[in-house]
Length: 528
Image (cartoon, rainbow, N blue to C red):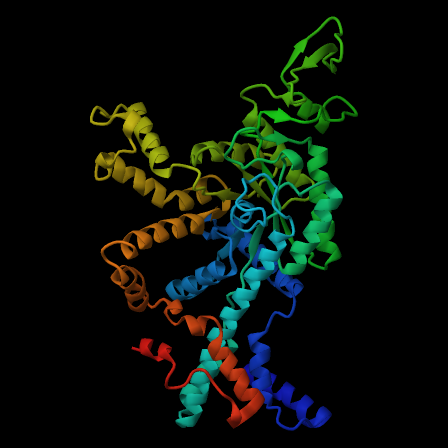
């Protein structure tokens, strides 16, 4: 409904049905517009449709890839979306990523933890709820500013300006965007995954990312010691999430199936097989086995092509895959996941290399032509070194003289302004665009950006403030830049909701309202 229609609807209830004295229809309309999303399910249904539309746009043209940055606090997510709207005028194609790594490292009651599913699993859906609470307040704050501007236009008798502002209100674009939320390996069996997924969805998540690692052996995707599960186990969890979405009425909900098989050389189980060539048999075909003619004490044997084979079993009771089978296992994982209910893929790689990713995607698309990836542009990669090595190797292969460069020290600052360094930086700049076109990547994200930006900015501030610069270290590096770059947080009281509270006080108490935003509020110093 339009602004005027919302006022009329509220007025009908107040004046005709209830006759409530002192309740203003326009104030009610404003509060309703500032609270467009009443529940997490409203958010999940809305954002799922946004993602589905974006996926269709990408299928039509890979230039329409999407992006997100990882979050560990509602304020961080809010500031990202406020900044996006400020700089680009729209939030289209920009999401948020909820990183399990950052929840483990920054939000666990146990203190900082590694990314091994040891943190409280309910803290992750709690972060989804927190993020949307902050995003909804960003809407309320921005709409509140429009309402105040509308009042000023009416007071000045400028009805043309008032109509322009009403048009802006009617066409307001929300800060509420899709969140891709990390559910790790499900924190337990399929039932545990289903129960946790419902918590995520109730909080507003429209897209859940689940990985094919063993839940109680889960490792960060860029660390060693990863253990995968047979496909039937993983598919059961994908189905559990789909049932959770459908039970909650979010039929458009999305599942990102993540495979860690490229870097995982171990499995906890030998897959169950019904017949030769089935998915369990294919999984077992990658096991590192040797043929045996006799059975030793406590040995586990499988039959392969009419022969008795002994899988390599470690003292940890894990089984080992053959070396060099990672890419084949990734391709099989992805095809199976998409055929059994997943919507998007995530292949965890050891480096950002378009040819490597694109090679696997090409094989997947031979079976599923519209397969699409979510890709982790991870801070775990040394992007500078990786791309300088890629340029160096490409030059050598093309016969170009590389004698001016030492491959063993390409990270050196000495190479920053060189031809090689400049070409590597250009490849980094266009990586997302090129990978969207050449490697089927629909969504690019950075898992831990604010973990690193907070560390860097805090280090710089501490060095200056506690050093010779003193208070100038804060003023020059932080506040002055906030003012000059138009960072909304320079008015931190406003960001915390003081102006929204003043509006409500006026609604509730009229002329008797004791408002914070008076002449003596020091935030007025930033009006210039």
